[in-house]
Length: 164
Image (cartoon, rainbow, N blue to C red):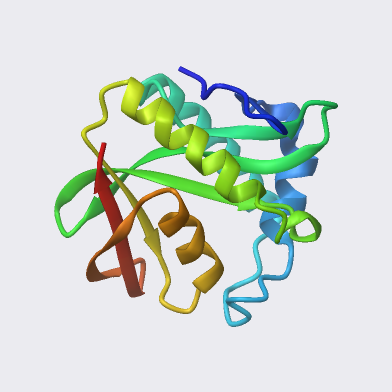
């Protein structure tokens, strides 16, 4: 299952050859979370392996997002997340730092939401740190609303969600 292309973006499965681009996205300074441990190329290698396992295990994962002319934008897709003992389908998105603020994450996440709905996902969430207001805006623009506050991966998180 791949999301349908949008007016500006297309999706494909992530492959090992994407390592340089995935590294660039994951290791970019995060203006929202300056206290986060810097990620490394090894983290990007793990990210690709994890993503490919998700394709095999769940039939979905994070897909590479590109412009129609092949420019690497980032990744966006679906992952299974444990939230207080409950397995939930999450939409996640990461965009190259220099491409943020152009609506690309919202456009990609909307296409992923539609693909999830078409595949029979009943409820979709986005798990977002409280300080990450840009990501919260993306979640809200695709129809997700704050459902609860949780503790995840060593810190507070907001769970935005909606029935599909």
